Length: 275
Length: 123
Image 1: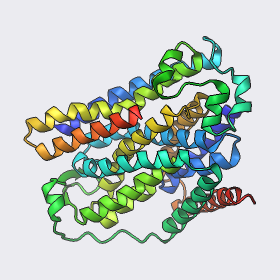
Image 2: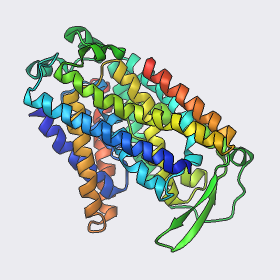
Image 3: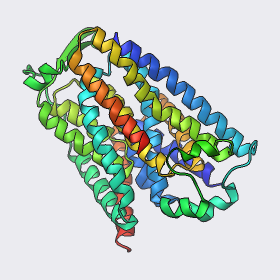
């Protein structure tokens, strides 16, 4: 019974996440840990595997179309994957109540961040920083909507490496997908085009979540009855969500997503505080 | 060039892992093999922290699940392990491609990434 309910809830999360323009990974852990009797350790492992499978499924076509860049992702993924291992080890070592409090606080902070996140910066000329130039973090892709080739380069690479270290830590500690943070870091901080940022975010997730997933797998935190219905629900929900995209008011759905984050984050925080 | 190679390895590996995961789960649900932990006992255990669960269920940790792979629940780990290994394999395949292109710095990053993923898998 529980696996069927989990499949249904994960399916709904994935539909809402696609329509709201956020990764489902950030919704999975707080909502499933609030609604289901599974310990947070198993939910975090499932959350990582849901985000990992979804990102692995999407990455090949994005790479072939040039909408995800290995040149951009590789240095950032290396830093993020190291810190995600540290995050996973710390998350599994801390008492459950401490993790609940930290998770609740992080989810509420993410909701505030998503609510306040500004519009995309205007496309402008920029100089690649020396580190980005040395790492050859530049390229081009064909934008079908614009009907032309878009050349890109990035800047503020040292700051971005520090940001991705923090993102990896959060992903490993709480089992969260990090699309909510990857895209603004790539687009707003580094100046990568939005489409490339969205595609490369998935590629980054596939590397960062792999590292943390191994830690949870090796600790025995993977329960097939929790993981597989979640993965199937997430993949099916994302496909249905993509079909509904364009027929639903994005702003309304995004507000629903933010409300869900506030409720789920608040509940995690209260549970951690024993209230 | 490197995008095509990496994408092909991800694609093949992900399909393989996904099929293994779904097939083993169907077998688990249908009772094709005996599980290590019977499904009716799981609700008594899945509310425990993972360390307590491992002790109560006498469950394997690390790569110990390989010895339990004939059990229906741990057969699912094969698909999970494939999905968790896809990126490692694709990065390893990338190294000679980048070296061949003369992109030594990026080849070095790929080698470091392979090492990090191996450490994660062996922790």
